[in-house]
Image (cartoon, one colour):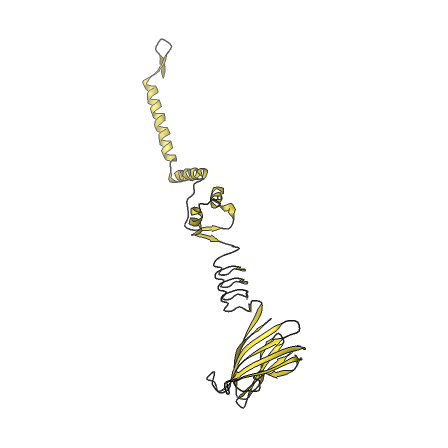
Length: 271
């Protein structure tokens, strides 16, 4: 209750002071009830977002530059790259055009390692690449430098008849082991070709040659140049410019391998 002091000035009565104290106490109690952990955390998060602050996680997954603050992107273009290096140490990049290590990339043009890349043009290592144009190591590549590579390995027991052991770009190798003696013929399925054989035998340690400049479809030449076991090279040329080169070895007396029969082995490149 408020009273006048006779001069027009209002003053509080004791009842007014008690009421005011009760009201202040009730407001303080209401404020304490509203102050919870969730309210404080939400308020701090709002302050951080408005000031540009962020809490760093241990790992980042970046799939778009839209996920990065404009201020951070601007710092990447600056000469000081400390922030970029710090983020790069823990960042995961979903799709990279060029990567030093590309375990399963579709294309790894300059990757140091491309374990399962479809194309590894300049990879240092391309373990299972379909095409490894300039790879230092291409363990299982089917094409190297535009050339097709084929391995030759055939173990023929005595009595084995004519068997095709190579068929590449029109050139065939036909092997047999009759009476324990190896025979290897080169055959063409393309007309107007040429073939040249150089075969070194282990019997006289001399180089023997055989060849044809008019090698017609269905014809054969002796890939052992009329001799017996040894190693040789054959170069085959087609009129359209496709060429095949074969390095090979033949053994029928266990001089190259411990096998009772005939063994033919080598590697061919064509394209």
